[in-house]
Amino acid sequence: MTVNNLEKDLKTLMKKQKLAVLATCHDNEPYTNLIAFVTSKDLKYIFFVTPKATRKYSYLHSSRKTSLMIDNRSNKESDFRDAIAVNAEGNVREVGKKQEFTSLYLEKHPYLEDFLNSPSSALMRVEVIKYIVASRFQNVMEIDMT
Image (cartoon, rainbow, N blue to C red; front, side):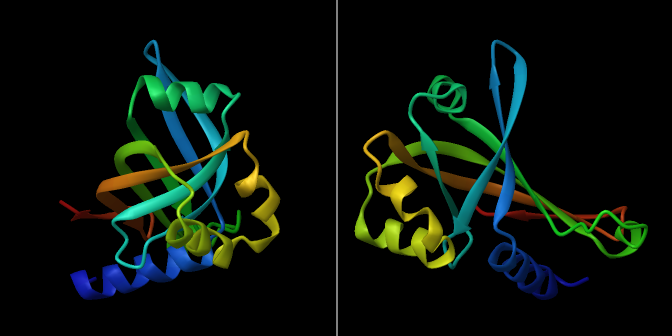
């Protein structure tokens, strides 16, 4: 797989998939959550919304480092041959609910408008440092975003 094909496949996956697994860490204990996400067109940023009164939000503030896993598995045997799993590593911070960010998020998740606009919710942005893409079960490639 060439770098151009990899980037094309990555953009397709990010556009199609609605959910990701977000990994955080607190006191050396890992913690994961399912989140609805959207990426910027250049894949440098991943946006998601979280309630402020959650463990996830607290952990994201105590350690800015995070990892997200996005995949297209179907839970079938063919996944060992066909599935793609992406690990996005980066630093996260809360961003204001600026029009450009909210429009991007709502374009993909219009049914989450009330959740996004709630005063008790925070819009978070991950600045992606790198993507690690695993395909065909053991083919692993890395894209440096810095």
